[in-house]
Length: 242
Ligand SMILES: Nc1ncnc2c1ncn2[C@@H]1O[C@H](COP(=O)(O)OP(=O)(O)OP(=O)(O)O)[C@@H](O)[C@H]1O
Ligand SMILES: [Mg+2]
Image 1 (cartoon, rainbow, N blue to C red):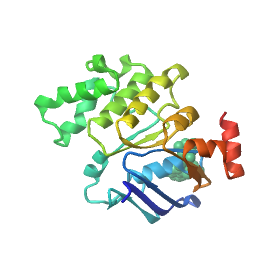
Image 2 (image 1 turned 90 degrees about the vertical axis):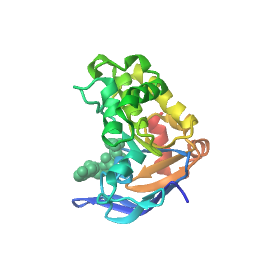
Image 3 (image 1 turned 180 degrees about the vertical axis):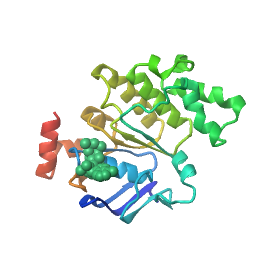
Image 4 (image 1 turned 45 degrees about the vertical axis):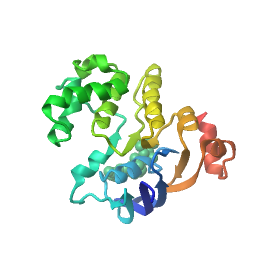
C-alpha cells in the first residue's frame, strides 16, 4: 500500500474544473516534486491531500484512511500530515519556542516539562537552536521559514507537504531552506513538494510529476524526465524554466 493514494480526483471551483482526474501514488520515504505552470492545480492538489479542500469526486487516502474535510479525526490527521506554505505563517506575537510548542501542548503530544526540549530538538534539526527565544520579526525570511518547518516537525508528521516554500524569499536565503528540506529527505521523511527550484527537483526528488491543465501530464525520475520529455508541454516548460 502506498502512503498516499490519489484516485481520479476532480475538483471544480465555480465553473472552472481545476483538477480533471488526478491519480498519483506516493510511497513511504519517497520525495515527489510537483512542477507545472501557474494555475495547473498544484496547490489545489496539495490542499486536497491535507483536507483543506474536499474533492468533488474520486478519492484520496493517506495511510489507508480516506481524506475529506469532514473526517471525524481531522485534527489528528493534520498532525500526521504537515504542510508549509509560501508565506511565513508564524504567530508574530509568540516567540519561536512558543510557536513550536503551541500545537504539541494543545494536542497533548508533549507535556509542559518536555516542551522546551522538543523545541530545542526540532530547532537543532533546522540549524536554529540559538533562536529559541527570538521573536519572529527578529529573524530573516529564510530563518522564519525554517522555524515554520521545525514547527511541523514537532508534530512528528508521517508526510510533509511544501507549497513553494522558497518563492517569497530573497534569492540568497533560498539555499538554507532547501538544505533543511534536503536533510529531511535524507532522513527518510515522505515529502510532496511544489517548487520552481528545478535544481532541487533534479537533485533531491525521487520522482517528478508535471501537472498541466489539472492533470498529471507526465511523471518519472528527474534525470529521465528532464532529458527526455515525452510531451511538447513539458519540453516547453523545461525550456522556460531554465
Ligand atoms: N478557493 C478557490 N476559489 C476559486 N478558484 C480557485 C481557488 N483556488 C484555486 N482556484 C483556481 O484554481 C486554479 C488552480 O489554482 P492552483 O492554486 O491550484 O494553481 P497552481 O498550479 O498552484 O498555480 P501557481 O503556480 O500560480 O501557484 C486557478 O485557476 C485558480 O484561480
Ligand atoms: Mg500554487
